[in-house]
Image 1 (cartoon, rainbow, N blue to C red):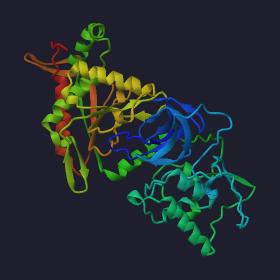
Image 2: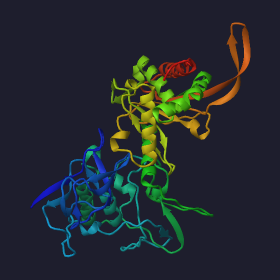
Image 3: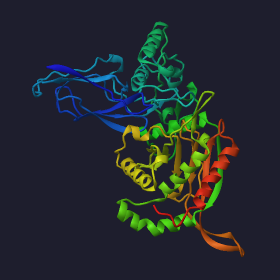
Image 4: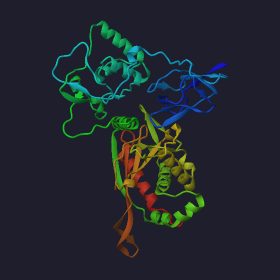
Length: 454
């Protein structure tokens, strides 16, 4: 018999850690090769981790909600072991008693009574980051902060020695030890009069002080806790607005030829290719052609360096049944014909809605398309998907009377019209480039060849 380490797998090009969502196997349970052992989550998608050996789970090294770096051993499997029995001992990684209490989601009560040395708290659940600095805090650090009565404002003041200045377990335990040695104790106010909600429930990006730790709500309200994905989306959007000075340009396009061509071929296309053709691959096709003409749109910034991407990976914003948003990426979109683009678009959209996306499916995008017209909007002002420098939105296609220039003179005709808008990072994309690129995309759509083959 031998012990085999189960490690946190590499989940994508830029993903360095993942959060443990759920253990499907416990110490003592038998496991087969490639059988799912646990579910994990990154800042993009949820994934399953399969077993790399057949045997019995000997030891689990991380608990639910722990953030684990890629390549770290998360469990051990004893190969060649006998079937598990009820008497099989259970092993867990040692956890300090100060963080073993569960963090409950509830409310805190407050009044004018003075603080005591043994404050009463009915739950305390700080956010994983605070809007004033966007620092990341692992669940372990947050648990310690909650059990020690450390507010988010106080937590922000703790110097971090981890990656990108993050506060590690060692940092916060050292801070707690020093605070107790100094005779300090940050209490949580108690009373019995008024029900209040922790400030962690307000929007990311809001700066707080010690006097703003609790916010009251009156009237007939319902408090809904953000799910994990919605929190990540909120943090990502705030970080994008904080990082990039956004400028948005608008134009409109006469897409009559494109609409009529699609109506003409869609039945034959589905019969021949086994999938439906939507407008999305047609939009992506036009975007790719224009990126080749204006390659600076397909870049990112690293300090003062402009990183121009030679590969064209197009992200497409996709709404999920839960109401959340995810952006799967079509890799090397410039190397696909219309049929290939259509199949990629449909496959990624279906996988996104059914929760089957892999972590790598959302990584590496260099430019993003969002179709706000899907929900009836005429136009939108999209937020840049970092670290990209531009995102293009297409609105609903509407029939409108427009002036058409003909050799015989101007006339008014009913045309299929669509607004396009593009937000871009003004640090690198000036108005001339942004507007020129957007106009070029509109012209590509207007000049669509209605007699083309697919």
